[in-house]
Amino acid sequence: MQIRLAEQKDMHAFFSYLSRQLAENGVDGAAVFQPMSRTESYLSDAMKSRFTHGIATEMGEQGWRKLLLAFIDGNIVGHIDIRAHAEEHTAHRALLGMGVDAAARGKGLGNALIESIFNWTAAHTDIEYIDLWVLSNNQVACRLYERSGFTKCGEIADMFRIDGNPQAYSMMSKAVMPVKALASANT
Image (cartoon, rainbow, N blue to C red; front, side):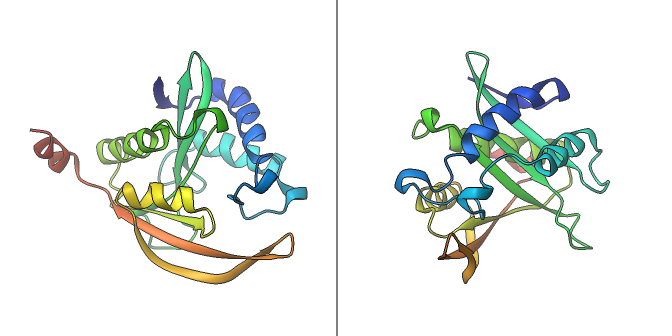
């Protein structure tokens, strides 16, 4: 397996992977993992644009995004990204998003992606915290984040009504260890 920073040349394959993943949102009894209805669970042009523009934008500029992709045998099987919060005065924090292909789940890829983005962030940025929002019913994801050191900061009950069902939204956060602390922890 290889995990590396995405490049523009990866975007076509990434969008194929992401389309397949979004189509699984809440299907066949699986948890809803994106706050979108079944009829909206597809890769929109706006979403494509946010990713394409984001990875081409320098950190600190509006719309930046850093995206890591996981490959097995040349195929994308997972992704993780960080991006700026929309609010002012939050440059020391980033928002996390991630996904793992259904065929690659349960094999430690989620942990590897989280470790990779934290290592990359510590080595290449001044970001001090990575935050995320997760649908509270997505217990598999919640447990992954908790095992990875994220702390639940709060929950908004009935935040969304997706396909007529109330969905709570949990906010979680984790501090990024500086590279010096990572180096001393590894010795």
